[in-house]
View 1 (cartoon, rainbow, N blue to C red):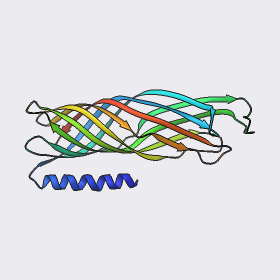
View 2 (view 1 turned 90 degrees about the vertical axis):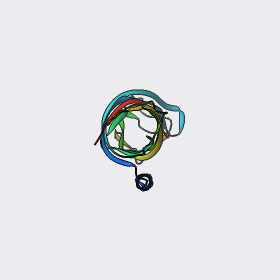
View 3 (view 1 turned 180 degrees about the horizontal axis):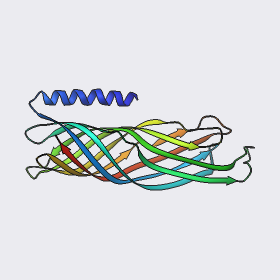
View 4 (view 1 turned 120 degrees about the horizontal axis):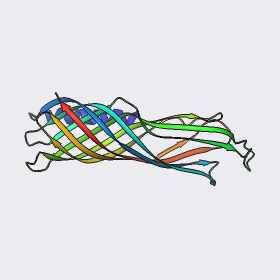
Length: 214
């Protein structure tokens, strides 16, 4: 939450400062589709022998709203907000070994899902000469929200940052862009239950975004 507040304050100040230089300020709506690639593992009791690794490719779609200030030379600064959750992975396993050496009973079915929530992006569009194309650079802040079914424990949520790069083309009142986003490593430790459980993962995404400016 602290990262989001700082990002909102910083981006608002940038856009206000930029708009004071007689830049055009627009509101917009975007639609996006793409694929998220998440790889990670779960450690039980800190033991490498109890390391459950998994990689997931998840298709996603979503929408966002944004505000953007654009100068006469085509350079633009904006703030983009995705109000919808986007799934980045889920998994399920059934344990039937009756316990580990630590004496922990470890039977039953365990499932967990993770999603990106309240994704905020501060971005810049840098025009590539007079071609109508622009380079995209952005900074993400987002909540990782988990939903799990574990015996007497849960992983909770956390917030992480990331970056975005891409290439786009601008028309009179629309933009179309391809983007790549890479997020910080995710680390979650379960609370409650018997023994210790920890998830470590890395997520990135590629996609296409179409935006209309008003």
